[in-house]
Amino acid sequence: MSCVTKVKHPLIQHHLCTVRDKQTRSSEFRAAIGRLAVLVGMRATEDLPLTPVKIQTPICEADCQRIDVRVELVPILRAGLGMVEPLQGLLPDAAVWHLGLFRNEETAEPVGYYDKLPKSGAPNVALVLDPMLATGGSVEMVIERLMSWGVPDIRVLSIIAAQAGVDRVASHFPDVKVFVAEIDPDLNEQSFIVPGLGDAGDRIFDTPQHG
Ligand SMILES: O=P(O)(O)OC[C@H]1O[C@H](OP(=O)(O)OP(=O)(O)O)[C@H](O)[C@@H]1O
Ligand SMILES: O=c1cc[nH]c(=O)[nH]1
Ligand SMILES: [Mg+2]
Image (cartoon, rainbow, N blue to C red; front, side, top):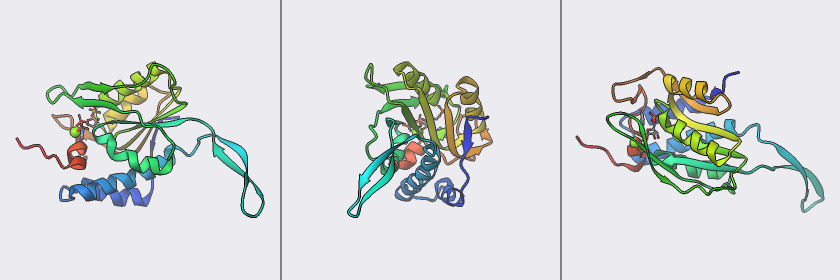
């Protein structure tokens, strides 16, 4: 069974048009990334374990179920920040652990610049948030870090991935689950996803690069 799930839903196809369109302004881009993050997030959490609980309603006692594992969010700065609030909408009590990485523009290799994960106390489930999975280098660095922290169940949530990137993650980390809205065929000479959507971080934060 593949660890890579391409989430299928007409709303995903619809909102992908918005994020791919180069005319989409930053506020609309952020909103569409948020909607796509929720759609991917629903699927990525559909098998979380539940524990039976009794709840007193205003009428009587009801048999209910609660998620009984610690599920926490790990956005990859910067672009992953665009997926935090939407996922907090689904998991309001989830802690958020930030990891800062950027890609070296010449080599496309990830460079870590922020990491304050504690030494112990890893959650049961970490949802890694990053809208783009291109070569897979950044996500691999994060997966290795989360494994060394002791997270047993790592799930990567992305909006657009390149085929090469998901293949790389799947072959190096067969136990890590990857959930994406779309898988694009190619990477260009700068290791940008083709057709992709451009630079997600710059489009979320409205910081276009000139020259
Ligand atoms: O799979 P990879 O080849 O590693 O590429 C994907 C990474 O590149 C982008 O980050 P970027 O370096 O643009 O940083 P930013 O989020 O600060 O813009 C993106 O958000 C991923 O983190
Ligand atoms: O296509 C890409 C590749 C890496 N990072 C992005 O933001 N976009
Ligand atoms: Mg960027």
